Structure formats: C-alpha cells, structure tokens
Length: 114
Image 1 (spheres, rainbow, N blue to C red):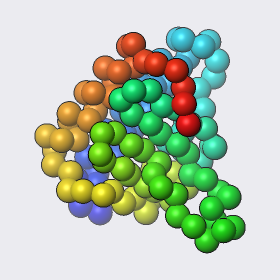
Image 2: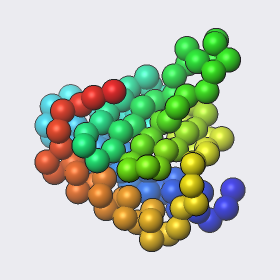
Image 3: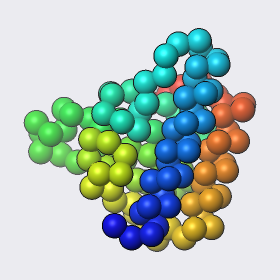
C-alpha cells in the first residue's frame, strides 16, 4: 500500500463520517455505511458510494465502482480499503479537493440515488 492509498482511505473515511452525521440528522435513523459490507448506497450530484455487491461474486463479475466523484472511480473488495483500485493517479491535492467537495455537498445534498 502506498501513501496515496493511505491518504485516499483516510479521505473516504472522513466522507463516511460526514455522511453518517448528515443521514442521522436528516432522517433521524441509524446510519448504515455504504463504505462497509452493508449493501447500502448513497448518491447526490457530487458523489456516489455503493457497498460491495455480493451478487457479483456468484457471477464472477467485478463491480463498476464503489465510490465515484467526477471522473474518478474507486473499487474495493467487501469494504473500503481492501483490494482497493482506482482509475487514475491520485495526488494529495486531488484527494483533498475530492474530500472538500464531497463533505460540502452534504450540506445541500440532493436525493439518494443508487
């Protein structure tokens, strides 16, 4: 695992924490993280996150993405950080921009979508 992987995991967990606060405050329900092995999902106009899809294991297929922001897609195996892959080089500045965009989007987030 390289430093970009560690920074990306930390940023995704910060987004997860911000999403937990947003979901709990908006819906007054317990938060079930789509960054973990839960079958949950969340999306707004800025980012989308989908938990690992177990049905693809049976079909021998790979999930398109677990996390998507702009043209960046991140996949993982069962939970965020495990067997993680992403489609382009991620710099610390880009990861920080992603983190800020995603967290800020939760203050005026749109409807949930898969």
